[in-house]
Length: 301
Image 1 (cartoon, helix red, strand yellow):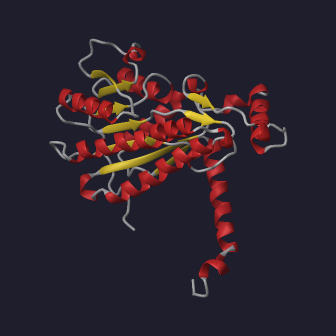
Image 2 (cartoon, helix red, strand yellow):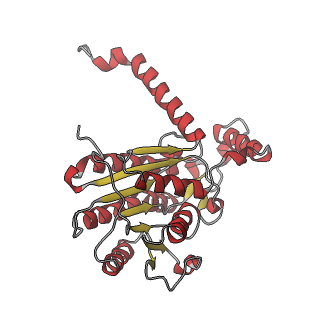
Image 3 (cartoon, helix red, strand yellow):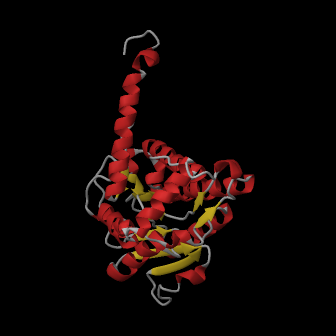
């Protein structure tokens, strides 16, 4: 199996960052971090509505604000064309952040809701990452780069009531791992899957969609209703204080990009994500051992 992210990465002092979904949350936090704390770096901040980027200055030559809708191939191509033209065909760091959650009873999901979710979470991420690889491998000085695909704890652990959100994030994870093994090591293009647990963002607003409730799933003893009750109890008890701040995620992303070490393929963020992913993997190993005899199909393992 081809190794991934084989060489230590060195962040250029004038690195060009392209970030999707900068209107709020993680995208906004990363954009703010670069603009305010690393002025020698150059920033391409994108959002579906450019007016949502008013928190960034208009008169800074190192900051370019562009409209970008990851569900539109034409929008992506236009944004990339403008970005690489503005910054001399250079792109070093991409934070592939745009997306929204879709939750509810899966039997109630409409074709339109499910297709829109996967279109944004998976195909949008794949389009931006693919275009980024093309630019990075053709950069004038061949300096490579990092593509941070923002997944989630939901890309590793499936919970009731979020089937299509999990499907999109699981797809991002599998796609990212495959492509990370596909690029040539000499290109020095690194892919890092970011897996945060709960983040204090405006996700509950325009970035969180709900499917229509299904009457067959409304009993309090249904798994999704139990999970919802547990989450609400935690919020009322103040457990939400353990959620990550968007700025913490931004700092972690910058740390990975700048520490001059090999880039991890996966990076869980937050104690909850680390512990739940570890528990899930340990359970999978136990289950794998339990089916060993059947899996061997009479052959030696």
